[in-house]
Length: 501
Image (cartoon, rainbow, N blue to C red; front, side, top):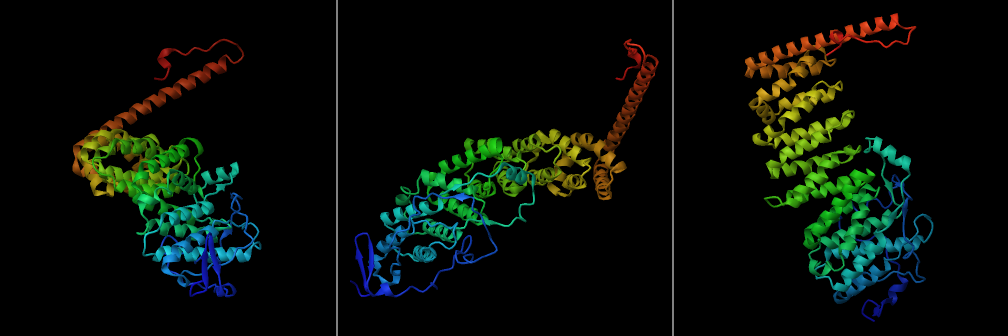
């Protein structure tokens, strides 16, 4: 027995005079910096409890002697890592939180132990042993890895068709008061300078990373925030896992786009990839370019694009900024998935298009400007005034305006009919005003080209009017013939000279 009345025996610790002394519930803790404080939401009653997560019962059997162990400060420094291992083993026990009144004392004790482990890892000043790393990974795995209950089909449809996601209150796992501290411990463990990546990679292996990535589908926003921070740290510290992480996330994206169209963690994955893409070395590898073409661009297809568009747009723009030759591929990809009847998605596409064009060089702009401005021409005439407005506001961007001016001989003939129709008959005053401003820009820089386009438009308009008159006369003739032979079964023939072109 040492000075504090604590005896370490094989397999654990026995308390001497400390056995009768109950540990105070107020523990000295360090401030948790990211992404949330493990001490802030323990008693938060405003969070909804979600019982949809199904946990394994293999660690849910509570030992008959689930008693407190001594504090780290009550044992010699040389024995603290052994004590840490014993405490970590205790925390492998999972409790049933679906019954709030069950095992209250044990639940509170486990949480206090978890907080002690977080504090120890955060303030450690000696290298962690291999056994300690093993027990940390075992304990974390026993607590956080769980299956999520399948969602009802009707809920999926509601989610896909709804865009007001930020107003929904977070649904919390009933065990979140413990899970949050476990996540904080894992995050502190990974970023600790005392964790040797060469040893830790034996335990934080591909299997562990795979299970971690599947947890991104959690419906708890704060859990996804922790997972995002942890994944980013693993990617930075364990270089051996980088290709595997990219490949696995790529598979999740592909399944999301072409099969399920439902995943809660797409925005968080893209946020991690934003940092990864930012660190890509130049010239870009072919693997990374294929990721842009086969994964990022198709992510514009799902109906729930609004959930993650900000992060997706950042990733795509990063590629164009790193390699300007990718601009043509990106613009044509946006045109391929351009929404036809969804004005809300169209607004997102236009905003992203502006960011991409801002990083586009003149040579790449010329390669894609014809199909691009055919699409923009359609947007200019949109009855949704915001779509037309944002399309016209592209001319407020100096870089884009310069590109348009340099290629006006190709662009103006494409968009001139839309500008004329807007100026004459668009229902929104703001759209008409912006249209007149754009017309003035073209007229000021090249009045001759403007006049040629105007003459051509008038000729096309006259031709369209003539075709319409022929069509009306043909229908009128058909109606007259039909009324004369309404009682007979004789076929009605129309002379070729009166048929519409």
